[in-house]
Length: 392
Ligand SMILES: Nc1ncnc2c1ncn2[C@@H]1O[C@H](COP(=O)(O)OP(=O)(O)O)[C@@H](O)[C@H]1O
Ligand SMILES: [Mg+2]
Image 1 (cartoon, helix red, strand yellow):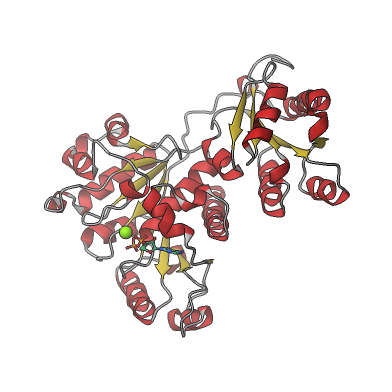
Image 2: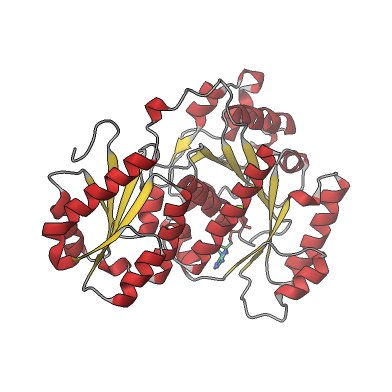
């Protein structure tokens, strides 16, 4: 280690160009253990969740406003994270952007051999001084934060529930240290495993079969871990003839165990409003209500909201999300708000990346795009609701 004792600081280098990436990694290799990434999204998702300090070194290809904006948010939100920029050539505009983004230093590419190591060590020392080592933090009294449940719902199929649920869970996993569990509750079209390219060994049916014997250890063993995104999946039953085994009671038991574990739970629901789905929705802290940009979607959405009121689910829990909000149709987002008598909370753009990502089995939120940015915003909104409610 270059500086100090204890917990090592993780060092990540983000650069698109393979040669430049290897040059930067080489400049630090003998002193720090460095992980290379091709994009910031890749880093955000894959970074070690329990490392106490992170240093992010952005290569010349990353000197873009969108990337710097995200890094700026990251260093502001996490006092243990600092960032440096390697610039192709010293350029006043780039340096100003970097400073405004809260980056600590900028090193010209031609000087990395001489200057990068000392810049990293200086930043490491600053982070060490600013952050209390975990060993000196008093152990928390045995009080685990209660889990939280977010259901993604729409009374119409094909509007993007599964896409939203998967990407939201991946975004949560990149933003919090809580365990993120994605439940695929669609017994007929369990798309979650396909969208994450997982082959689950167990499903919700196994959890339901355990009845009251279900406890955190047993439930843990039924989850499928997606190491790429950090998300844990409770998969949908693979045999469409067995959904009857999932009962409203088993939903309650599963959610209670996950809450006791302090998990952040995202549920991808089927569109039928049967007693199983009503149970999920009644027990959810937030309902991400996805509406598409076509007349049947909006009409069904209005009916769906009336049903929620009928089964006494408070509409304050609803987060109204317009998917493919920029689709060229006769409707406008204003029209949708008028018909639903609710303000839209989030609008997701239509993006060709989305179907491609579904086919590749790699969630779209892993890469930079406007769609990804809006998903992250939705995640932030839900996390801030959660912390506001926790502290009230
Ligand atoms: N914002 C978007 N931009 C482009 N395509 C989308 C978007 N959201 C969803 N899709 C596509 O729409 C289809 C249906 O999405 P899906 O999440 O499976 O819907 P649901 O779960 O509501 O039935 C998928 O093929 C997906 O790729
Ligand atoms: Mg679906």
